[in-house]
Image 1 (tube, one colour):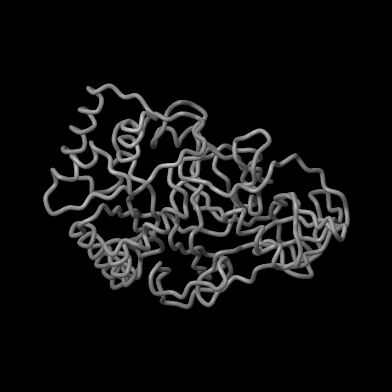
Image 2 (cartoon, helix red, strand yellow):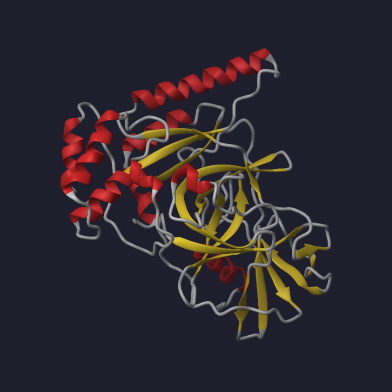
Length: 398
């Protein structure tokens, strides 16, 4: 797949996608925007480039499906999305390449521009009918506005209602702080020049000065640095267009966050597993593993790029830029909604867990920090590592 940097660059160069995001950001129920590769484009790209063999009859079936279904509607995927393989590594695809069968589909749909990517507008659940009638009517009008926007769009847009995403923090985990918070101790980086080791977790788990205990209550260190998150002022929508970009990248503020990290200066040794290095390129669909204190070791695939996404903690919203979705991986060969039933998702208490590639030894791909019950979210490991080195002022090694 294209890298997440490729997806961000494609969005920035697409006037159509940016205009739609700008208009949707005026609708108060909108909570975020994600971008991913169109699964049919990806399939046709692989066939044309001899990365996948598919009989001509199967291609005709997919074209039949495509023309009988509105590709601009709600969560429409071709039948092949119901079957999945357990493993997928990094496979680069060029979003700007000409794909013969895809170009034929593009030419057959008048007044529509098919893109190799699909943007999803995420909105919160509408209020139940027991709420104030005026609020219900306002939500319904907001949903109607989004529906009209999707129907009138000249490029593929999806609209999806999702539960609120929250920072994944809970009690009773393996890492606890002197303030009563808890989470997951993800991994360790070393300042070998000065003989100091730092454990990495999330900012919403530990802040500067907190004493850190392991699951048995033994003090293992003290938090020496954290990334202060910037709350989103109400009633602003977390949009990818108008809110000021953090400087430097990655960092937090003035209104958008990119990091949720904390460093714990260790005073006790920590058992660690071998890690090859930091993954510098990751892509949608890639197989990864999460080690969380609550759910243990679970298998996942990387999902969409969250261009902008709102997360909540104790009633306060935080807008994040370019986090990455973490999707469930079925333990069987079945994908889609049915496959989702045969998965284990990360949950509260897994915050700070390291997400590793499915290599041997693995590469560090990301830091888990949030979930909504159906998917998780991660921050790129390269960003966490860059912030940590900038904070301590020296090289940090795995």
